[in-house]
Length: 175
Image 1 (cartoon, rainbow, N blue to C red):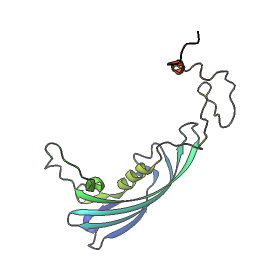
Image 2: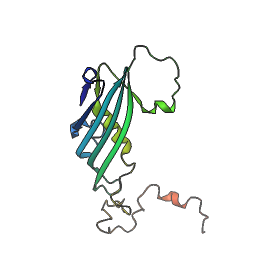
Image 3: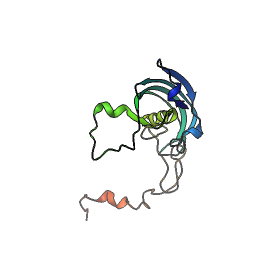
Image 4: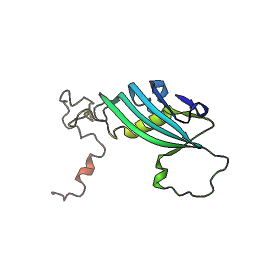
């Protein structure tokens, strides 16, 4: 969703839109989205844009342990101040960031692509680890069978693991 600054009246505008899988440049590689609905409130204050956003999304991810599909529902909101990007001026040396600057981003020219801000917020709201169930057993490291579905026939699944020897480090020898 592209918004031109000249189209924003002093009272601001509201936009409801949906993002599709093709719009999600960074998240689309790892997740399959069923829907991603966005609501944006945009207002200009001098040369800044105040953007408030809310979203709801439903997606499918892969369990990190057993590789089964896991449905995930996300929702979130954010408030940003967008300032014009003045690359030509440049900044010499280090700049000091304050806590007030955490919700500041930049836009180029006279347009703002809203989708990227919603995608960024969703990436922050995603779980760090995707697990299908709290007691997921994962895959057998030897034969690859899903241990949640069936028990494998491996005699010692840890026998062929290269770091298995490390578990005995620090233990006194029993010889």
